[in-house]
Structure formats: structure tokens, C-alpha cells
Amino acid sequence: MDESDTEAGSESPNRFSVEGERVLVTGASSGIGRVVAEQFAAGGADVVVCSREQGNVDPVADGIEESDRPGRALAVECDVTDRDAVDALVEATVEEFGGVDVLVNNAGASFMAGFDDLTPNGWQRVVDINLTGTYHCTQSAGEHLKEGGGAVVNLASVAGQDGAPYMSHYGAAKAGVVNLTRSLAYEWAGDGVRVNCVAPGFVATPGLESQMGISADDIERDDVERRVGTSEEIADVVQFLASPAASYLVGETITAAGVPDVMESPDV
Image (cartoon, rainbow, N blue to C red; front, side, top):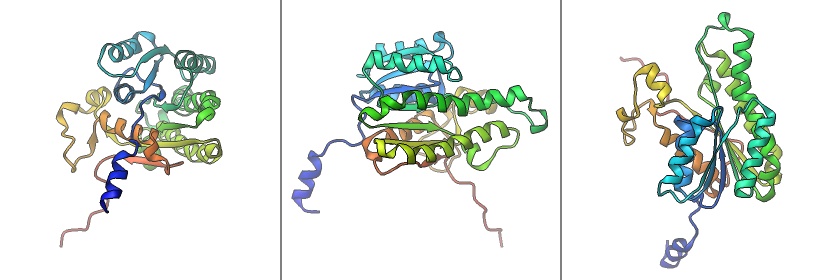
């Protein structure tokens, strides 16, 4: 590279920037969703955060507003399984910030149960939140995302790629999210909307801490050899997919799960 190339490169815009973007994040009261919203705001994006209970999501918006993050925040109560509530969420986003540039479908829920013990209600509830909720939010926000070109980032799971014993309902729903990502990416590419997905493995959220006793404080992000990540690491991938730097990624699912689980050669 000659000196002129270096100078030209130094003047190019930061393609990893999300400054000025209008971002809607579902399931943002805690864990990955909350950190995603906070990191977008830290990058200069205005964010709408939603949860099923206003009291759970107000502190997230208040924390962003009261911090030195340049982005603004709005909290909206929304059950993603209720289409009328989702439409109202999108309308509130457009009314507050003038549009929607990025949609992060993070709302999700699950519980452990053997397949034989799964009730129809239990199955339906998990599918409704994880898969149908993604459908509702994406379709409702679609016309606004298409206005100037935008990005959808879906949150799936390695359970949707590899399967997960005692979580067949959750794995099936997340597999649907992975396939929806690829199918919709093809349909909406002509409208200037990129649709991609992140499939996290184990992440040190409050839920994982209660189940496995692993806290984010126990994790060193510089360690390569590990199978548990942090919410910040997932948020980094989400923000990348929403940025111009991911312009050639369309319809992809990025697995963020640490060291891969592979078959090792036997000792000889």
C-alpha cells in the first residue's frame, strides 16, 4: 500500500458506525437485549426498548437517558405475540424518532421439558414468542425499513441449528427464525433491507447464572478457549450486522458460541 492509499483510507467514513440510526430492540429489559440497546445508544443511535411490562423496561431507557451515551431512548410496553401491540410499538417508534432503520428481534422465552411432557399450551407459547413474535415485528416494521434501506437482525440460538434435548420446542422455534432469516433476506434484498441472524451459544445472562452459576464477572473476554460468552460480545455482532461494514452479509446466521464442539482424534 502506498502513501496515497493510506491517506485515502484515513479519510473514509467509519463503516462500523451506527450513529444516527433509529433502532428498535425487542426483549430489552435485561440480558442480551438490554446490552444491545445500551451499545447502540453508546454508538450514537436512538433506541426504542420494549418488554411485556413497562416497569421492567423503563429503567433501561432511563439509564441510557441519564448516561453520557449520545443516543436517546424510549421505553414501550409490548407483548410481541400481540399484533395490535406490535403495530402500536412501531407507530410509537416512528412518532418519536421519525422512522425505523434497524430492527433487532431479540424477544424470546423457553423452559426445559421432555418432549413427552410438553403441553400444547407450552409448545404454542414458546413458538409464539420466539418465531411468531419475530414475524409480527418484522412485518409491521417492514414498510419503514424499506423507506431508506435498513437492517433486520434476528436472534436465534445454537439450539435452532444443532438441536437441544429437553428444549425441542425452543429449538424448533429458533430453527424457524434461521430459515425465516434466509427466506426473507432474499425477498427484501431488492428493497434495500438486509436481514441477518445471530445464533448465540451459552451467554452469561442472569438466566444462565441462575441455572449454571456462571456470572459475566467470571468471564475474561480475551480468553479464546471458552464456551460461555458475554452479552457484550453478542451485542458487538448485532451492531456489526446493523452497520454498513456488513453490507455484503445478507441472509446469514452468525454462530457466536466460542470454541467449536468437534470430534477429537483418540489418543494413540
